[in-house]
Length: 252
Image 1 (cartoon, one colour):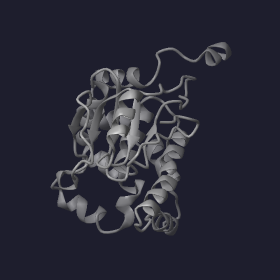
Image 2 (cartoon, one colour):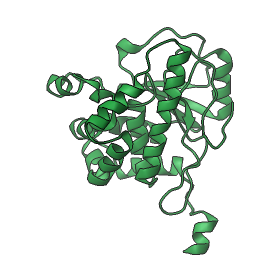
Image 3 (cartoon, one colour):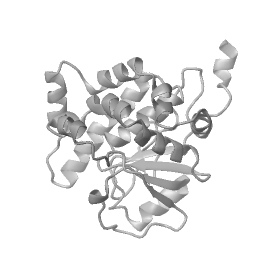
């Protein structure tokens, strides 16, 4: 496994996995490598890849998919990893889903704000699970590792005071990774169509994420969903060292 400047995790059977460590916060700290990993589906991971995740420090996996998306595993999950199944979109609110399932908008961050405001408890439940997971790294994933995983990545990083621009840049890394996955599996690549759809709306994925973060009171909305101040404190302590970086301290 490699963890270079790209933060990509080179796992056999997984194309869109990356560590969320090494990102600067607005107060001069750095997110902790090994604390949090986002990924696409882990169903095709080999035994060797699972051992690599263990070596990377992952001890908890949070599956954001709905039950009908579960598939057979290519290899046995190690006993040292706990799996939590917390579907992010498993809701029977057809009024909401009739709007968002009716086109490519569901494959973009356009739905993030509406989802967070309509179902704050769904996101809060995942964030609380990350905050209070057993010691070790936490990996969360959906199917492609782009949108549901992107929403949780956006929320965790924002609560840890990573800038909106850096959060948006992290989201954009999924496009090339998923293009590689599509080529390897001889499947159509949705990425270009998604970008074209957003362009037709006069925006980009990055612009949508930045606008969402700047216009939505995340802490208040997630508090409505049951996320407590204690949960947020535990989440931030897990993801970010408690002290500003020496460079920040020297310049403050």
